[in-house]
Image 1 (tube, one colour):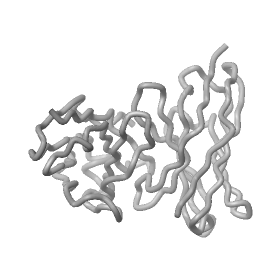
Image 2: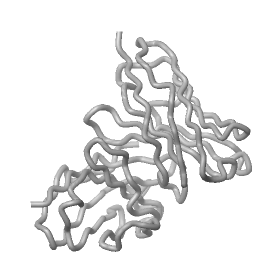
Image 3: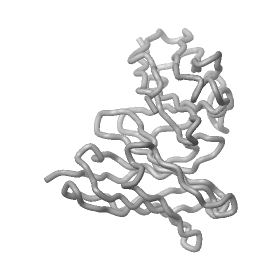
Length: 110
Length: 119
């Protein structure tokens, strides 16, 4: 199972909105509504931000939202804040009952 | 509060074996599916595998690079998850995270335990 494809980096200014894409295939992203997103600050443990494409766990800001169209999932962060600067990873359930992660996207808040 | 505490990480030679443990608390371990995820130094996240609850069959699934070398097991009487790693390779060097597996996502994460494979 190949890793999902994410842009290596994205950037935005405080207050703006950004979107991170995550492209897979019909055997993973496109075939199931089981895409999740994780935030990881340097030296810290990853944190679940979105599960099942668009659901937020308790305590996650509603500035974070997820969606999916075909084989591509997206994470949108609105009202960008300095604390959002981190690495973001997408993940999908696959046709072989495994999970596959994306390569990660570094978000820089300008 | 969910707590996951990994242990057992060590320096091991290529071809060697190691068993990691994960002590769980703060939730009903028996009913939860569990997973391992790893992260090589300076690299991204890589899913290792998952074990279902015994109620759901207790079966396991693994990522392709780990299949046949790694085994996930659980002892519900001790609220503990294990990862047995055999035939270790230098590319298995990573921080190994224990996690809960809910909604086909990695829901709660431990702090990780470091495995280094080197001669």
